[in-house]
Image 1 (tube, one colour):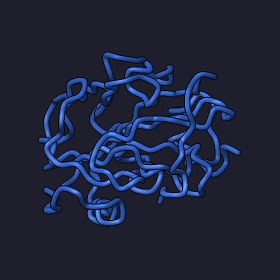
Image 2 (cartoon, helix red, strand yellow):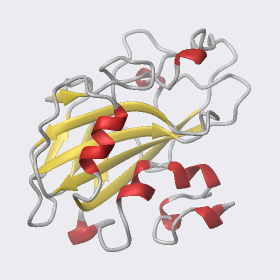
Image 3 (tube, helix red, strand yellow):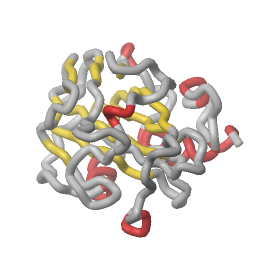
Length: 199
């Protein structure tokens, strides 16, 4: 059901799904801001659409967030905000894995495991990278890294939730970029025991 996904966003996914229409980028970006000025997000750890290494997931001890790199946003940007969501969580809304803001509006990067300047609450209420841990019976989930360039700096305190961050983003996106990884569980992995805690 790719029809629900905005036309400008469809080419970003190898196999667009209706769930992709629920992503933050579909809500806050549009054809004029998506990739504006060559704004791009990437990672030295995985190719766009490829599988995440287990070292970035709950299936490996001492796992951390993957490294990310981005190009300079277009003029008029004052801050960058990163939102990472799993649209395949099956709860009606994407599962938020990471909310990051306070990133300078310039070419930059987050190193593997680096603690960002400002981090909000993920879907289980922690202010950190929520390690991917989809149910074993599921096909691979998409983990969509969405970077937004805003026309104003956010004044939110660390630990703000999705609703607060999204309210601050709305109407202020001057450019957006996305990059996706996938992950499926191995048979030896343990399943979530706290699924009911998801927002």
